[in-house]
Amino acid sequence: PDWEIICEVARKMGYNMSYDSAEAIMEEIANLTPIYGGIHYDRLDDFGLQWPCPSRDHPGTKYLHKDTFTRGKGKFHPVDYLPPAEMPDEQYPFILTTGRIYYHFHTRTMTGRSESLNREAPEGYIEINPADAKELNIRHGGKVKVSSRRGQVITKALVTDKVPPKTLFMPFNFGEAAANLLTNPALDPVAKIPEYKVCAVNLERSD
Image (cartoon, rainbow, N blue to C red; front, side):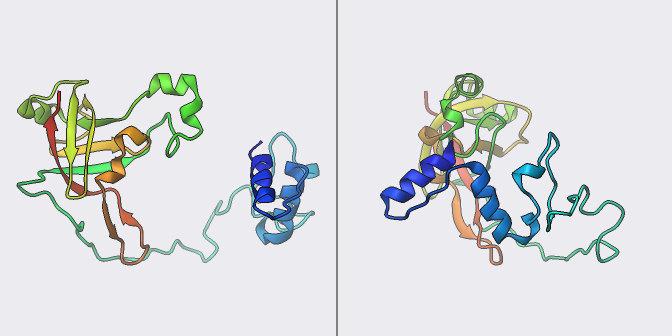
């Protein structure tokens, strides 16, 4: 189990992390985190317990907001629209957006070891609208070069109607086609999250 690996790594680094079971770990979580305070292995059945569950005699919270919000109504916060830090131009005419795919998790350190998942999604790719593919003479399954102001990636083209014209989608799961070589590191002013969902790129045939 993962917890045994983490304990072994910790011990080799000089910290005696001496858990002997997943139950012992859950007991520590329950002791330190009030919303999990009542969740113990001897209380778990086939359906488990839904947090918040602050004490042993608490039945668990089936619905956090079943009939109404705790303050009566939902609270919405208006925000001002901020345009992306980088928009398409003559040199980089496409918008690239990145994200996950169904078959793999993050950088595939676990899912990449699964034969069945790799069979469904064996390699990186970029999705391109048929109209753009026709204009650039890019064929389905052919190699393309995607470039931005920060780097470039060679990957496979998937021609699909799932993306609109002048918009490209690329999963970030594949190291051999690392989408974040292209993305913009500009930070959101509040959340301080990099702007992975919008950057300007160029696309050209590479085969």
